Image (cartoon, rainbow, N blue to C red; front, side, top):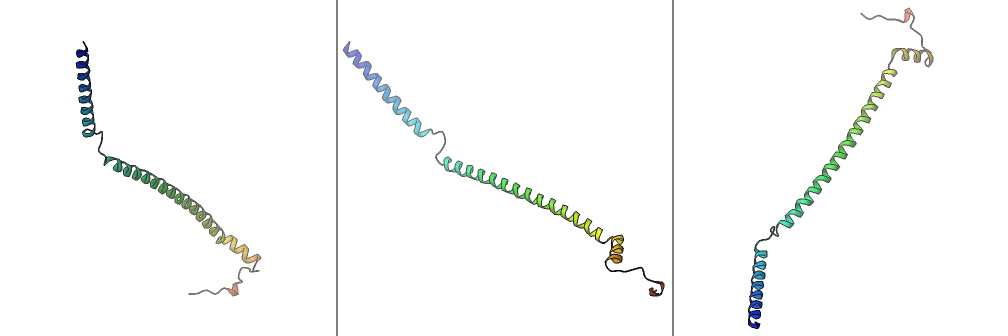
Length: 114
């Protein structure tokens, strides 16, 4: 009986050793991915983050330029309206009469060119 136990124990230890050797061999030859993949994945992740940040910065710059363009167009419209008001014949006549004491010309002051 003692020999049977020893024989059985020897078979188990041999079986365990074979399984362990087989597991170690399988683990080293069948990796989930090659080690060169890790730096490549890191570079791709950094590149993706950099690209996204660049897109956000560019979008922000475009938005700021659109706001500046809108404000300048609004200012241009106000300036054009002010210029039209300043050039108005009615305003110029009133300014000539009040500020410069001018009156319409007399008939002897008018010279016609042919």
